[in-house]
Length: 95
Picture 1: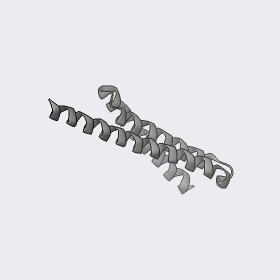
Picture 2: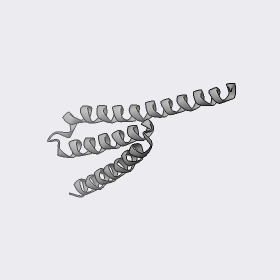
Picture 3: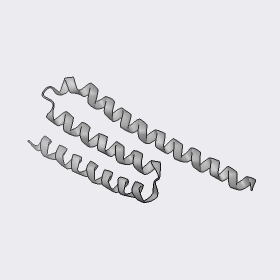
């Protein structure tokens, strides 16, 4: 019973963080914020799926695969942000 309650708290926190990141994305159109928002939504959905699965051992592969995709999305967004930042700093040095 306490596991379900704590999972609900984690889902709520993930959805709240996602709402903040997506709001920042709407203001700035920065892909990093969109990636974090989508990753937090994915994390919330995987927590719900893991909680509602009848046999958690069978659902574990799908859940952990979705989490891996979410974390890879975050890493790709960070790498993209750093790549754009370094290329723009090179352009300002040439001018």
